Length: 314
Image (cartoon, rainbow, N blue to C red):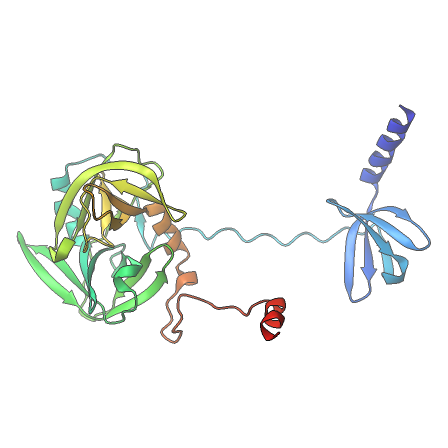
């Protein structure tokens, strides 16, 4: 019992001990509470462990030293709400017909020499989202936009398309229309795939098999369909080649996913990238910036560890 009390007293004294800084050779230092000083060593409590420092390594001991305040941790990037639009308040649900007439212009057809897909504008300045696999290996990209004027449909083809950012692993690409005569574009609102519920009604707009402006409707089958470690939204809305990169909307007219694949030997088995992944990609787009001078983009190759180098040399 006495031994327990003595140990407790030692801990309390150690906790109350003033902080000190031990300056070491090599311009290093250690800050903590001095538990004991001996002829050949100093014992320092640095919080998560206790260090035994040889006297031969100590240059100077500064007692009653108040450690400098830790550098503030940089906060996560704040979503740039001016770059893409989200709903501040919950919108009322409407019919697919109403929503298609209102936001259908925001959906485009993306063309490359290798094929075509779909996409959608996220702001009026011509920035649009599509799938990485729609533009993979391509630099000659064009975008066909469908404007409604006077009750009629007017097609516009834009050929000056810039690749802004790519994320192969999320299958997302950010493009921008750079044509000088480009107007302000109708754009979508990004919703929240986390609050979507299984059974919610959804609809997709895209260009399956090149049939532009095709609308398909279904429900959210599951929010957590896993493929190769990545979670996708599964929907019964019909998805076919050419839909890739197009938006999957809820009945509030908000994008909840980006359609990107289907099971070809089944029906009603379409999949979409959750919009949360799209927001992450857009918020960190500088990290995924496309560089024409880097043929390995978006990869960055690092030197192997020295041990691997030695093994290879042997």
